[in-house]
Length: 109
Image 1 (cartoon, rainbow, N blue to C red):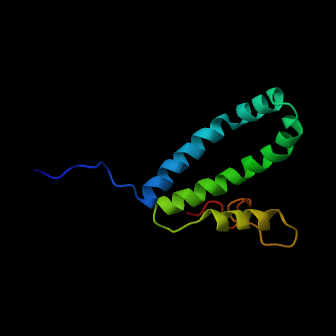
Image 2 (cartoon, one colour; image 1 turned 90 degrees about the vertical axis):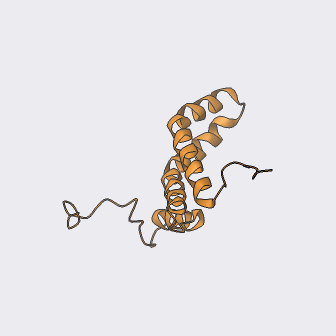
Image 3 (cartoon, one colour; image 1 turned 45 degrees about the vertical axis):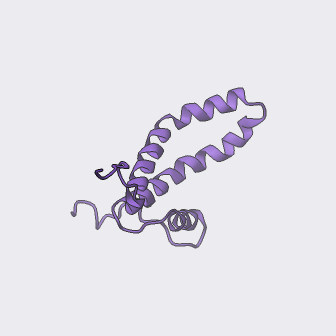
């Protein structure tokens, strides 16, 4: 008897890459989903109005963390969300991803 092929081995990097693609695909249709839920689910419109902007704001952090894990950079979603919370909190350091590029870094590569 030969070796039994059980299929490809699932790694954390592979799972993170697949999850990032799913998040990217969902965010393309997220506004339509939010509108539909707000229209057809009783009482959901005010909740969606509060939650939807945070979803749009948080999605890049989730995608970055998943890309970091997929690339082996050991990124994690929790630290990305802490960075987001600090960025929107008064007196906390701004996120370099959410901040506009400074004049000194524009045009340099």
